[in-house]
Amino acid sequence: MIYYFSATGNSKHAAQVIAEKTGDTAVSIVDIIKGKTQINEKSEKTGFVFPVYFWGLPEIIKRFSSMPEVKNSLGDYVYCVITCGATTGSADKMLAKSLGRKLDYSFSLRMPDNYVVMYDPSPKEKAQKFLAHADKELETVCADINASAKKRAGSTKGKVKSIFISKLYNAFRSTKNFYANDKCVSCGICAKNCPDSAIEIKNGKPVWIKSKCQHCTACINCCPTEAIQYGNGTESRRRYSYDKTVNK
Ligand SMILES: Cc1cc2nc3c(=O)[nH]c(=O)nc-3n(C[C@H](O)[C@H](O)[C@H](O)COP(=O)(O)O)c2cc1C
Ligand code: SF4
Ligand code: SF4
Image 1 (cartoon, protein in one colour):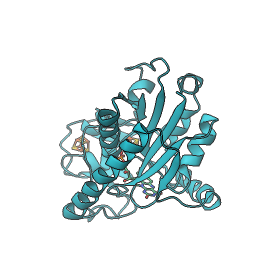
Image 2 (cartoon, rainbow, N blue to C red):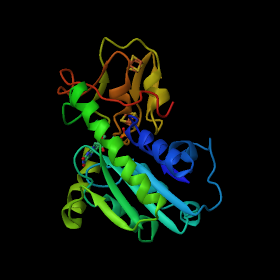
Image 3 (cartoon, rainbow, N blue to C red):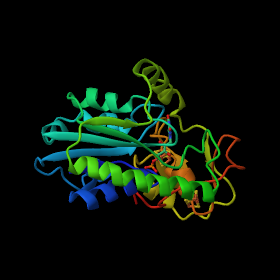
Image 4 (tube, protein in one colour):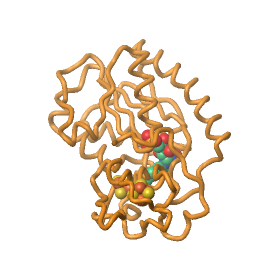
């Protein structure tokens, strides 16, 4: 079983490739949390695929990995593939701590960065190059998993610095700067696609109803008219998504 969380499609793509090449099944963590799918019985290998947030774990991964039924479902071989724009810090070690066991294998997979709230995503051609490179790296990952390899690979950083940087996540995880401008066509896609039900449509416009959300960027990156903004930095930035309807 491969558990995945993805906002803009990178991690879902990685999970699907791994599932196909290792003969496993990729299951959405959002679907499990929303009760649309159930955790199946133990399988021989258990994988976790998700994006790094601030060199640490997305809030939904912290919640999911500490659930007793998830811990009980772990196979003998447990691995993670964490997607990132640059580095995953020591997020794999944080996952291991939350699961209460060592990971047999972890890989930090560089893919296009989606954090438009802070950075301008790469131009399309550059993003395509990142994706082509990631697909090559995935071939190695799948061969490693099939061989039950035990290693830690990819772009990781030290534990102490990671703990410090990961603490910034909560400080940034606020909805107060989100708004939709005049380009909003009231389609409701942002609310349907939000993994954490943090958006309600009121009078045809999105309202961010929670003081805290995942900050996953699905809403801002996947709005079909690019109406969603965060503060005053995002109007001029590009948007990035591998898949616009990951959690719909
Ligand atoms: C809140 C947030 C924080 C992020 N922090 C990091 C980071 O610390 N290091 C990094 O390399 N990429 C970071 N990223 C980029 C994502 O991890 C990366 O683009 C990931 O592949 C997106 O996966 P997805 O498309 O499956 O959602 C961050 C993205 C978000 C939304
Ligand atoms: S996805 Fe964009 S256009 Fe559609 S309701 Fe949300 S903000 Fe408006
Ligand atoms: S409100 Fe936007 S950033 Fe927050 S969890 Fe929902 S889709 Fe992600």
